[in-house]
Image 1 (cartoon, rainbow, N blue to C red):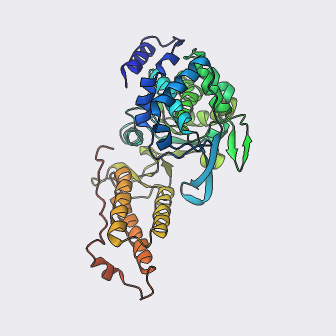
Image 2: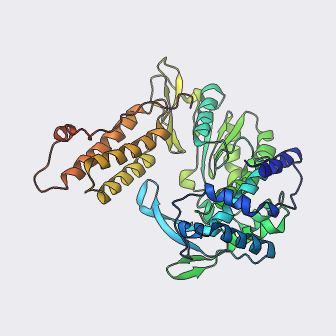
Length: 428
């Protein structure tokens, strides 16, 4: 965090009710050039066709022009190019992704940094997604600690249907205005929300939602759910609970842990109404209350309930000493997504040299292990490795008409090696 952002954060922390009236002056050429270095270098061009490389050729000239346009109030948010990418775990379905122009991405990222300095002072500990120093592994570890060592007996698993598509613009701006009163910051945010969506040669004007793909979207999502869910739970729900209650949220993916069944059922009744107030709906088929704790666990018996959260399937089992433990393995959706990606990659790179295929498959597997290698996952990760190996042999055999080789023959090749999994995160 830069000195400028640290000052904003310190003031926001010290004065929780202050509304910031002067933030736009931080959008200087120097600040934007620092943000530029942090942007994803692989980002594609937006509707204007300008690539990152082309924009960078005259970077400071472009930044000076952008700052001048912002100060004069001439900035206009260009349309967002919409593309569709395979949905996680189901390649047959596709989800929309908005691609802003390179310059728009830069300005969104800069504004997101400024908003982050303000709201990091406000966000509650239950929120983990898209925050500095907070990770999905921390959320998973907190869940495990609360179930294993706390009093948790019930888990409410919630899924907001199409959250980013139904985010209400009016409510969002009212929420932002609780802390931000600088019109030069609020104006571009309104423009981004109303920016046209370019698809199949036509531009449509959105009336709700925030396109996924822009750097500002995760910050806006956190602000929206901070007010719609987190603060409401902290101030209205928790004080009415007879037992312990705690939410764990990563962006729009969240669970609520309860020690008391009556509290959990009361929350399940009132949450849909709370979400509806802010234009959101729960996906009924993915929202449920399940017993998940010491009173529902039976040593030696398979626990009948499980749930998926942050890519892991969680169920109750036992550790090596026979005590209750939360077992986490990669959920089927995560495995399907990874294997589908490997299969597609092999199809497109079938004729690459074996040693090169090996290097890239090793990198893919290590990336998968890096996220999923927790306690109890080694057996599942080994099964994934064997599936990758099977796909690889099939792909190699498909390159030639001279006949297929058995796995043992390929295994004699010095480059035919894939790393075996081992536990990487002992504290999660």
